[in-house]
Every structure is written in C-alpha cells, then in structure tokens.
Length: 272
Length: 329
Image 1 (cartoon, chains in turn orange, red):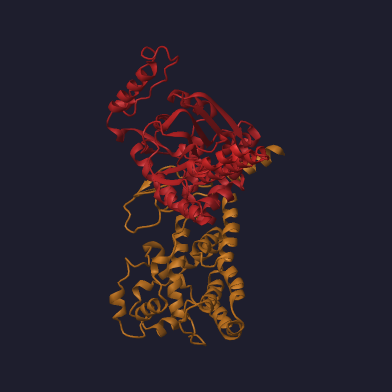
Image 2: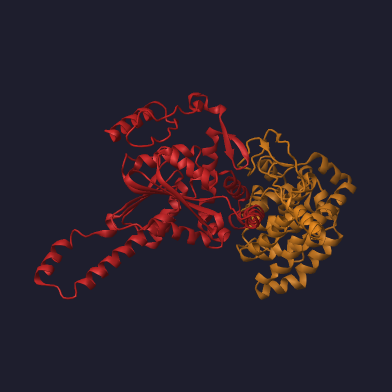
C-alpha cells in the first residue's frame, strides 16, 4: 500500500513528456524565450515541462493572481493553459471537422504585426473586415502583439489551438462590435465561454460582472449577455475561420456566414 | 620576511595568470617550498572550450556570466517579495543569524559582495547603530556622578565620535538593476550615510588590497563562474585579521528533510516564480544552481585553499543554508 502510494507520488512529480533531444530551428518571429537563441527544450518554442502537481499549483496561483489584479494578462493566460486541456481537445476536433479549420491546423497562420500589413488593410473600403479591424486597433489603442506565448500546454497542436484562440480574440471584438472596456470584455467572454467551453472563459464570464457598475450590469443582463450567449452557441467555430484571407470581405457578410447577429447595443470605445 | 615573500609571490602570480589556484603556504616559516604547481587548466587561452554548469544545463564559461546577469535583471523588481514567498520569511532569520555571528562593532568597514538589494548592508548598519547606542548608554550609566574633569573631557571627545558614519558598508554587485532596486529601498528607508553602491565583478573587485574588515557574500557565490577567483579576491581586499563570511544554500543532511526540500524546490518554487514574478525559467535556474553548488565540506576546503584560516561552517535550518566563515591572517 505504501509502495503504490509512493509510486503514484513519483508519477505526479516526474514530468509526463520527456523530450530529451534539443531542437534547433531558425527563429522567424521573436518570442519571449530569453534563454534560447534558436534552440529550444520542449515540444515547441517557449514550452516548459510541468508535472501535474505544478499544473495544479499554477492553476490555483494564477487564478488568485488574476482575481487580485485583472490587468495581469499573463496570469489569465496561464490559467487558461493549465485548465483548458479538455476544451482544447474539443476545439481541435471541431477544427479538424471543418475544411477551413483543417487548413488552419496544417498551415498554422499567426496574427502579429510582422505578418499583417496594417497600412494595406486600412486602405480597404469601409465596412470591410480588414478596415474595421484596423479601426478597432486604433480606437482601443491595442496591438496584435500583446498576446503571451503558450508555455504549459503539453501538446504541440493543442498549443497552437490555444495560441490561435488568443490571437483571434481581438478579431472577435471586431466581429461582435465590442470595445475593450470592461463591459465589452465581459460580453466577449460570455460569447467565448459559450463557444469554446474553456474554463478560463467561464470563470472570467462569471467573475467579470462583479466589477461592473449597476447600469452596465443591467445592460449586460438584459441585452448584451443573452445575445452573446445565444450567438456563442449557434455561431460557427470562430477558430476555424481563415481570417487572414478574408480582409476584403464585407463584415456583415462575414457575420452572416458565421451566424452572428449584429450587437443589440452599440458600445463606444471609452476608457475603462 | 615571510609576509613580504608571500606578498611578492602573490603579486607575481596575479601579474602573470589570474586563474592560478595556489594552495596556501602551511606554516609561515617556509613560504617558498610548500606550494604545488596547480592543475594546468588555466593555460589554454581558448576559453570557449571550457564549459560550466548553468543550473542543470552545460554552457560555455563565457556565456554563464551573461545569462546570470539576465536572470537577475529580470527578477530584480520582485526579488525581495519572492524571497519572502519562497522561504516563507525564513531568509530574514538567516540574514539576522549572519549578522549575529558577525557581531560587528562600530568603526568596521564591510564589503557586501553580490549585495544586490542591500539586505545585509542595511542590517549591518542597523546592528552597528544599535551597538553604538548601547555603548553610549553604558557610558552614560557609568558616568552618573561625573567630576569636572570628566565633563570637560566629554566636551572634547564629542566631535570625534561619529560612530555610524565611521562604519561604512559598501554594496558591490555586478548587476545594475539589483543595485538600483537596493538603492531605492535604502532611500525609501532614509538610510544613506555610510552606505555606498558600487558595480563590480566578484572575480575582479574594483578595490585596493587590504581595505575591508569584513567581506560578506550572501546567496551570491553560487552564481559566480570561477568561485576560486572570487575567494582569492576576497582574500586580497580583506585587511589582515579580516573575516570572510558566506551565506549559501547547501546540502541538507537529513534524508527525510532532503526529500521534502527537493520536492518543494522543484515543484513549488518555479510556480511561485511564474505567479508572482511572471518568470518560471529564472527560478528554475535558481533551484538547479543550488544543487550544483559544492556541499559544506567541499566549500570549506575551497575556502581553505584560497588562503583563509580557521574556516568553519554553521548549518542553518538543517543544512538548507550554510554559513561559512574564515579569517585572513
């Protein structure tokens, strides 16, 4: 009995995936791996092996840290990675079953300033997806490069799904017409929770409203919230869309294709 | 004669090869005959061939210093918070023990190498201040009924007495970010007299010979690429009679405690690093570098090899931390 207990403890402490060979690749995009110059330890650049105990501790710790200080995006990211294993598998299945999603999984596009041509996109006609996205970035003073890299997902493909989810978040704001203030973020979180089922989104959706003032809360519960949930459930999987090839497409057409209704309330991009 | 021979000998060695590891002359009476030629690892000038450990990784020696610099640059802001979180505040007791064993008196000069955020130096100044107050109080108590002679003597000695300013602490660190954080902390506490902040490499200190009464290095020596060089520099800058003191993580002797300590180090500390400081890898390096450092006896041998006498160590918290002390004679 003691032997089996100690063996199970050993298994919890030993890392699950032991990729001993170092992989050297040319780094095309700069990432936050300060300790590697072209060579990385792990399944993908930035991957850190963690044992189940460490993942559990990280989940709890990052949850507490994110609640204390919601501006710590890295903690929200870590919470998502450590708790989202089943949801990521689900999402990957959805992507595989969709032809466009399958293309994304094989081609692995990344959305960042070095791959986007913002000047070209902002010269597109008004109402096109690219133009609206540029407008969103300008109005809310955000950049697509502010997303943290994935570190704690122990599967290379699932790590890409997670990264894609993060990078698509801003595009989702554009599609839903939500600004980056607290109310807009909560509305997007509700949509994402219904769509992806990631525990981090669900937690954000439940705890986010606690920071809203009563009038906004009312807006959320009466119109925005139900709209977000309803659309989240019926919309096509947003990760399966190859946005990089659809900049010229009219945003209303894109919304119809994805089965998303336009927002019931137009929110302006006000500072939080 | 023996002392000057030793001095000339040491100067000659320093001029030619910095890396030579000289075993200390045994009895002062026979300086020239006792030294053995060191192992020739220093003569290959192709330093890129030599590699050392960086945590559990093997890196070229030239790269280790750079990577250690980056680690501490990243963790400097949250360094003190992380220390409290990782050791549950016990690091304060360790540093207090160092000060108590040191028992500095007013008027000594301290060199705190790898002093970073200034924990040791600030404690030193506080301790010395306290000693100063005690002396004053004792002096006052013994002068309950002074004669006119005593009172007139007191007037003349009051200007010469400047205890806290006399005791000087120099914080030396290779990392500017850590010094910056330390300086901010000291300014916040309003302590500036008797404290200086110097950028310097422990393997090549920017000080003259025989300058300091006490040399301390707390939780820094395991990050140095050539520990023996750092020890030799320590010997050089200390005055004769000066004391070398080193606080460092060491080997836990008790096997049960060792297993718990290992589990805690490897499971908990990087997680704390990620959650509090947003940096997993720096703290992974930290726990790995602790395992790569020599144990109490080996380190004691290294200190003796550098030329210190009366070297002894004290185990704190069951061997988690060891306090090594040696004297320059």
